[in-house]
Picture 1 (tube, one colour):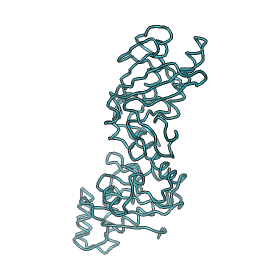
Picture 2: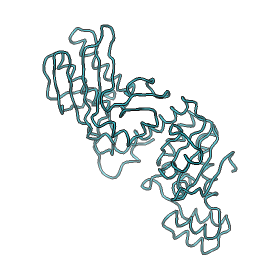
Picture 3: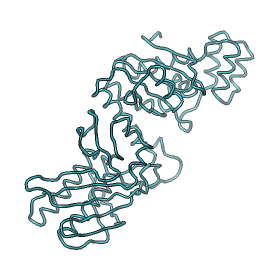
Picture 4: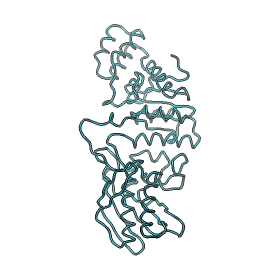
Length: 368
């Protein structure tokens, strides 16, 4: 997925992931523990070669442990963790233990299989673990000592912030995850959201779920949950990222996918759009008029549809003539989705109105 397609006009600032911040805080704390004092700033090397410098927001040094904090700057990305403080406490570990990790206040613990770290472990992803381990080993080597240290990462207020993420349904309890592959937050890449979609699919597969439902919003999620009595782990908050969901399912299939959303969003999918955001794809009202014509709509309804400004207005035009437009849109969306997953799973489309009423549905094999 091309990050540039998500960026608004103008030059935007890049930011740093929670993993990069935790790595920098680890370096500052460990250096202070071993050299007896803190430096004002700390510089780390990221996997891609960038060397950002971080200023400490707080620090403390005791005889057997040191702590350092860094305020996360996500740049111009609307990241839920922008402005959060990442605090790392370093203390000596058992001889031969190597680098070990603990979840402090506001950092979650994994409880379900399917995520990159096993159940029972702090929700610190492999890439941040690798960065932190490497910086710890490098510093220990400089002091000619084994890299046997315990790293505790905390994010004050993280448990509350996590309620704005999908961590709960992924089985991550108690707070946020420490994420980041490159260490860099690219503005409007929406990588965290897409990562959560992928993780939701992974958890569903690992826990043996055969039916998942991906939804475009809270109304369709509540409606499809009630329709099938699904557990939270079977629900994927897809948002506008139909392409990100379907591409991943193509290579990581489940037995059945129900894709649920409002009439406007699913009309975009039916018209071949994989990004359903209003700023990145537009409804083609002429194509909607063609659909009404196919269903037997009169000349006035076709003309009114071509002049319409919202999808719901077109749905009302169809309803006034008892034309099953939402069912036709569901069939078209079904075919687009089935093609995207290369027919590797059963696909169902459910179209809901603003009140959560089921107005269109399609499932089974592609009917051309």
